[in-house]
Image (tube, rainbow over all chains, first blue to last red; front, side, top):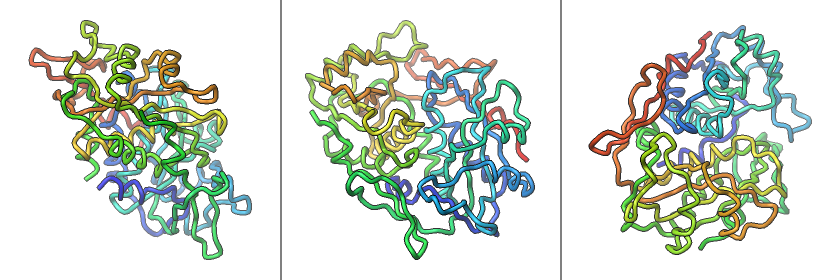
Length: 190
Length: 190
């Protein structure tokens, strides 16, 4: 049931680094993106798939982690992502990718969660540095990095209180994410 | 299985207008969006839910349908959407909604498809006119309209040939959507 899968699909930032993900598996999730909607069906999004440990460790320092957890520098050794999918716009196809990136990343992550993995869409990326690491050509604009692995943290949803949407981590290391209620989100029904 | 659901989740533009969708059902799909990821967890997207026949018929003329089908003016009477979800950015929360709209609409439509319905994300909207119909306030920016109903058309995926991504409709009325292969989409694996 899709609600169960969407609920399990949290933004995971700590992983069991001993559990690897195969390239084949990652391509299967990208296939889900390829089957999803695209504005004007242009399909300008391309992907780079990274599982090589050395390259993963080079990418890692260029990623920003969990902005609201100001005392946390990101996952420690042993709990870092074991794979990345770079989401790239091919500007030779279209300058406008509408919201294809959100559609595609949601499909990819739902696939990952179904298979017992998980990840996080990261927009806080030193894009020029990572583009250089990936040897991207001029027409290829890096949009997002999806960090992936076997989740090794508990993430729970809770209701937003006092309009405070900042996620937080409790003493037991559980990550809490306040979500707005449907009542708040729906301006009108007519 | 998520692949089966994503594959069935096509952009449907013709519906069986005799099959209605309840507001309760639509709110259930919006709940799926509320449980999905949001950039910085700001959750600036709001929704208007429209099932009223009179309002639906007022919105309809302000929607653009299937740009590549130049001889088709959109669904005829009897095959029009029975409900709309307007996706709205609340600029008092954030001016930047990242790709939240794609994430949210994918979640909503996967919910609709699971329940035997379907729809289409429409960006070609006369936004000022529809915003007026919905009596949106200044801070509420209309982003997308999702048209929804019980699909009454067959949509098939096929491989892109000669880089032609334009969807087309055959003599039997089947809607064909060329999709790029995973091989084309993946720039590199390393």
